[in-house]
Structures are given as C-alpha cells and as structure tokens.
Length: 210
Image 1 (cartoon, helix red, strand yellow):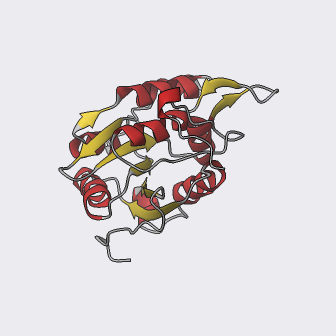
Image 2: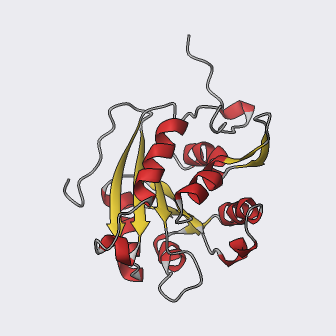
C-alpha cells in the first residue's frame, strides 16, 4: 500500500492498528523479523471485534521512528500503534525517545505495568524503557505503546500472567487498551476473555447484542 494511504474501516467498530518493528538488522534483511508476526498472531487470538493492521519494519533511527509513528496516526488513521524493539539501554535503542517525540501526552502507567510483568521472569526487566503516549490532532487521537522485542515477552506483556486455574495473577496491559481507545474517541474494541478480558467501568459497557 502507499506509505500514506488512509485505512478505511469496513465496520464502525473496526480497530485500525499500526504495527512497527524497530531493528537495524531485520530491516536490512540480515535476519527474519519476529516481532510483526508475533503481534499479528496475538491480536488474531485476542480481539473479538473487527480489526485491520498495517506493518512497518524500520531501523533504529530516532527521526525515522518518530516520522513513522506520526504517519501511522495522522495519515493512515490508526487508533492504536504497537511498536516492538529498541527499548533497552544500548546506544541504538531510541524507540522510547522517538515515541515521546511523536506524542502529545505521556501515559506512564503502561510502562510501569510492563516492567512489573517482566520482573516476574527476569531481574533485567528494570533495564527496559518502554513508554506509551497519546498522539492527538484536531480530528483524531491514537494510543502508541512500546512493547518488548521478543515474541514470548510480547505475549506476556499484552496478556499478563495467569495461574494454573486460568485466573489472572497480573493483568496484561491490553486489558486497559480498549477503554483507553474509547476515551480518546476511537472504536469500541472487544476481546476474547479467555485470552485477555478488557476492563471497562459498568457505565462504559455496551449492552450485549441480542
């Protein structure tokens, strides 16, 4: 598709998603990107309402990352943008800075929760610098969230942790994303509760369809 082509909803509640994998080596063809397929696979299992996504595989360059995020929101019309990669302490890891450059408001709770989830597995989770922001224009707003680079960590961060009985131990960040998108004027996204139960206050829930 044209880099700036606007996505068209096939349904009023269709969620438009931008997926961005940030990697010097994968974008140069040195190895196969794993982030974008992992994101698509997880969204396919988790979302119960319509969605479509557009992919970007780009190098670790701050200005280019910011430009891509702005394009996906302003030009393509995405409601949600998920990035993977480039959030560690290495000098080439500039995704958080680029994301803050694209945002109009920071949403610090997402980064805090992602690190809490990852700390259940590895102490090096404190080295992760993922951020989330809202980008607003006069006509549109979108949520942009940085995710880890590894497919297993992507799933754990989005889905959270469950006990042997299937009960939630630590909520995944995606539980809060549909309501956040509601609040910024986006479509009403629904999830499959066996994967991740989207949380909304009672006053914000739709009546079940007959």
